[in-house]
Length: 252
Image 1 (cartoon, rainbow, N blue to C red):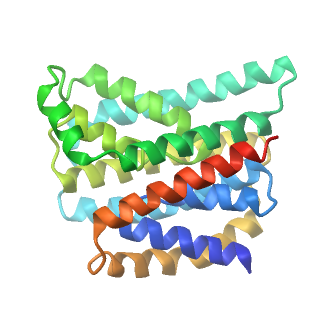
Image 2 (cartoon, helix red, strand yellow):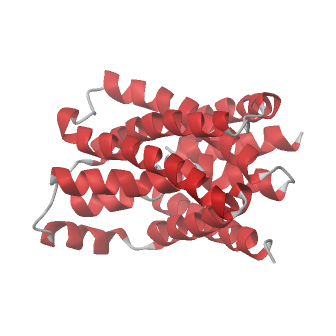
Image 3 (cartoon, rainbow, N blue to C red):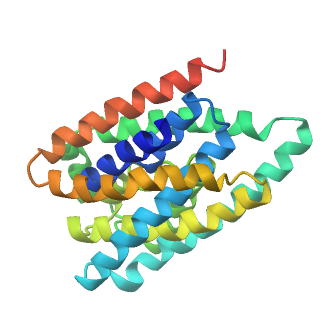
């Protein structure tokens, strides 16, 4: 079934690059005919399952940076709360929640594509030049901003967060991966509550996606040792850009 194949593709991308639940699963489900809320809800559950597994592995290896990451996660949870309030407020203007989500997902995917395709050397130079590197207020604001995209689209917990953290912190690659997974687990789990309120969790669909997702993550993790990671990251950027354009064009 197409849902299992979409889950498999997302799992391969998550396992090999750390990106994929929102950048691939949700937009493909929308293009396959599912409503934006249902697709993003499935993407968020996939995000939490994959990120929770990776977070536990990183915790066992001692990669989590401890209290230094707390402002980022607290900001993320606050961003989800603000998103929930904002969507309820906007819904009073006779604007469809599904329209907001579809537009947000398209724009968010273009943002993910841009961050993935920017050369990492430029980000490293900005990181060294920043006088506010690792400042708690900066991390709090970053966490809230990325959470807005994650809550509305299920994308961005890896594609947007990691490039931004490369600029504003001195964390090592293993710490970045661990923080991204921990942040994605916390923000994704909180965001799911928003979709429970809108009755947008399709459990049979989520089950089909997870059937493909879990073996895809395992296979992608093994493939990551043999395939160039920069090549895969830029490939994911091209895919995210294409899907973002396809979603935005499908509105007209």
